Length: 345
Image (cartoon, rainbow, N blue to C red):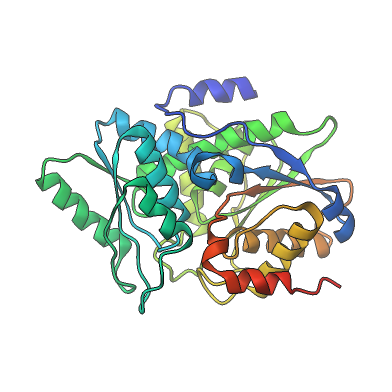
């Protein structure tokens, strides 16, 4: 399919306007020179505009378009206290006039409101914290039942909300079209890396397949398999097929086995890693671009490791999809300062 044909399929879905698109595709020549690797470019979805930006703003265009089309009058999401998804959803709900209910999983003992959780309060969201051992999916189900008894029409997003997750994947089909149109003349899209636990990687895989690209799409997972939100590679493959069904499109090119890497999680979910801190320092000092400590830093550390291992040659082009999460910098100052003190040799 051509980019125009893909966009015509996407246009059949309900959508709202939230993001500043297209986001930039930034060349990183100093970084590429320092690591003596491929040409590295960064798709700046940290620059989608709404509430510090991030990949969820792009995804919410389709997810909340579907919510409004379904007659929803409120939104429900439950995730970690420092959830980027929750922050962007609360801002989107405010812009669209939809009440947003958040169920942040607070640690024990509680920590001060900071980072994403601090920002959540500015958007008028109804914040109902749950305990660290509670299931976010079960808590959302209970809240939905409560809201429905009160005559509300809630729409659930995030983990456990299958249709919303597929629509989030569809948004990254559109992102692939943007990347292809932004590539410099003569450059081939050899690989895309991103920090993903499902929808973003699924959409990138589907987009590349629909456009007939042989691009490797590498997902670096930020969480271990025991986490409630973890999605296995075979489930990502199911999401690729489900997102294709939503837009009525069969890929021209098979996407092969899903490469979802677990080797850069570090000590655990929401916790920084030594490789992530080094990635933060290197990108900051060479290109002036920020990564957050627990998502994009881990994803970028995976890209760097593969480049240093010789997976990609100097003649190839590798794109990192930056999914945002920058308020997380202010929630983990010790990680930031540790990255700043990293000796890069």
